[in-house]
Image (cartoon, rainbow, N blue to C red):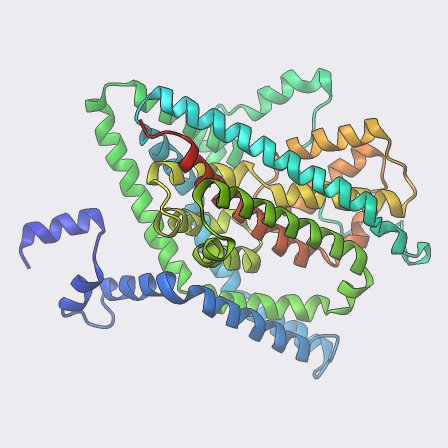
Length: 458
Ligand code: ASP
């Protein structure tokens, strides 16, 4: 192959399938690996993940506490070992997700034609995020007050004293009171990019990226160009590492499901059936709401839409982390949903950090459920406070497993509901986390379709 052409391809990273097949590549050659991963992500990932999911749950049930074919201690040990590929998978993604969010948002912003278009995109997106979160919260309030899941819990089953093992330690976000607002803004507004990256402060990183991106549009294009090339090289590099990690995805899902089922079993789920069902019905309604948006603005039927986004949804379901799925969501938005790259690269990472409709819905239902269980009545003022807090909290909730329940602790405190309630719902939280993360990711993908259609490209 001509040397110049080869160098050009290495730069762009665009190796087509034909080129892979024409070149004599040994099985261990990195290019060969790249091709296989590409094929995996392109064609069969969802099938493999579904298979891994059910297979993992099946094995977990057999050896877990419900059927208990083997000793509990041994099944716990198997669960620990089985979860190792999942831990590695998430770690590899964590390594690159922060730089990826940073560079993708900047590149997305610089892809805007001009500042006017950027302003339109930013404002529409902010309005969209707030609107869909309010829809999520409203669905939650209506459902929790009609179904009243708290009524199905007997008071004797509640242990109010045990708060020792609650996931409260890493709560890093709290809603400010009115006179705390200035110092709250001062705290949230970043001052040190490297510091924010080191501490994984995603919200601060999004702020930085937006300011950086706007400045990059404002300076002389000749000066901006080398920096944009550098950032897009970093982006390609991160995406390549993510593609390698995807290779582990089915094994990771398989192991994580074994661990999950051996730890909790199905019986925990059944005890809190009414609560779990209320959250799941709410999430389903939210997904239908997204289908309507996608149908109205992109003329895509729900079937088509699901078919295009199922890779991302299944990975969200199995990892419970919208940050971990973010790179795949970006790829799905661009390649399957055909969203313009600049829009996908701006909307998806921003959404992964600040738009969590599923989490908002869950937090409201969980709060109202616990209020019903503990007989705390929530009047109009308390409900309004709940709405404002949850809309704010869903922006500050980290996109990682279990973050939603940690933030829930602060919401409960604000409303005078005993924190020990968290112990009650903790056992079923993982399955709800998986489901709400799927909705969070679907919400971001819907947002990208919406912005792509609504914001004019001229
Ligand atoms: N795990 C969720 C996410 O990553 C956040 C949550 O716990 O609600 O989107």
